[in-house]
Length: 168
Image 1 (tube, rainbow, N blue to C red):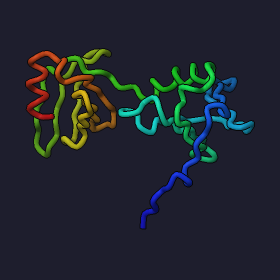
Image 2 (image 1 turned 60 degrees about the vertical axis):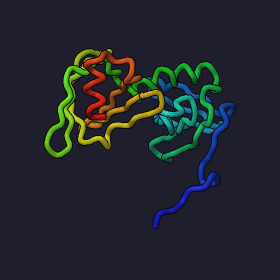
Image 3 (image 1 turned 120 degrees about the horizontal axis):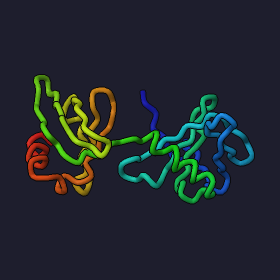
Image 4 (image 1 turned 180 degrees about the vertical axis):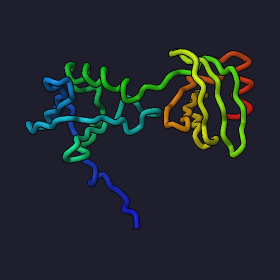
């Protein structure tokens, strides 16, 4: 039987009580209300639809420490560290052109694309791993769990659009 969470089950942290720093090895640490935590991990609760809100802090020992509703209100030193770390956690190359896109047996889609980081070829298991968001933005997850983004289908060249609209 699954348990439904309520807001009482979630610990919200005030940006005023959280300070994020680094230890002497460069790992993220946090001071939350005067208590020190080491080896901090970060996750955005809604990375594609509300990336500026709801940052989850966790550590290896205690698990989830809490959620900062508006993490952009953290002090500037903490925000600087988050701005260095978030791109590492959410590295998502942006697709600028689709050279080829083929449907394979079993629902597999084979992509040959150009991204801002260079050419890539990858496979997506099925349309279930293609998420179309408002503004014709698309997030794709390949068979190795890597993510790719098309910022706006309508801004791709005609060739790319015709391939994308056939399968997406």
